Image (cartoon, rainbow over all chains, first blue to last red; front, side, top):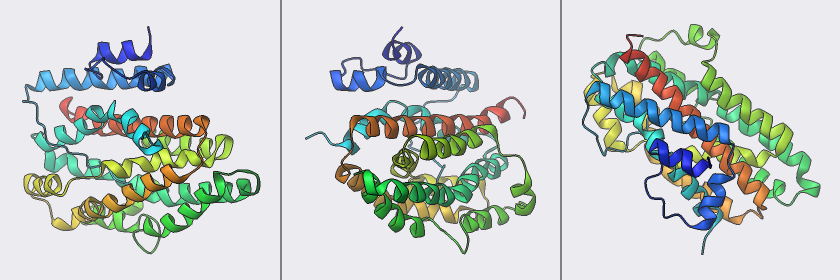
Length: 65
Length: 227
């Protein structure tokens, strides 16, 4: 399974009509990292569903360096 | 024309929905006031180590500069950016002041074991800087392009009801990081990067955002489970 397939299956990538250069970057990533990203997305989805929250479009990152 | 900064943004677009979700969940959480100090701790650990990370990258870049076309201009950028990231008399001291405004004992805070995901962010950077190429630090710094939005910070202040002094660094970065991000993108586009450099920067940025998303999720998900 390619990195793109893993991310599509997890719902991280919705639009699969990607430029070739874009696909190359993603498929060149460490598969372990990609699996981790997909896992986080699944956990977030599960948590969102269990909490019954409405999806918000608010961009809200509160982590700074 | 596609640029290095454009390619990095396209790469990070992949995990932005993941990266921003813990913050959104924090904002909407029933225990936001209780969780905010733990969430702020993530940034405080990063603030304590960002300058030492950049200094390590600067030292390595200076050492490589005579035979490395990327290292010399990278060193120039780091020399300029390190003072901008001091935020206090010593690196991270202003972030600790925000924690103190919440009643956190920052001496005890600094003595505690580092959360594993934060340790992974920092340790991975040190490895890449020393063993691969100091340009990896630009992937870590890419988070500056995804800074807090002032409206979201104001909403967080309102929702928590906590003292405004505990949000000084968030409010400051909501303004400062706009320019810092532009500067970073200008540097990315001006460096003579080879594909191997871009790949390292891209993986560094992805890894940083992914681990920090997980660290944020640990705070809000831990609370979901009663932690």
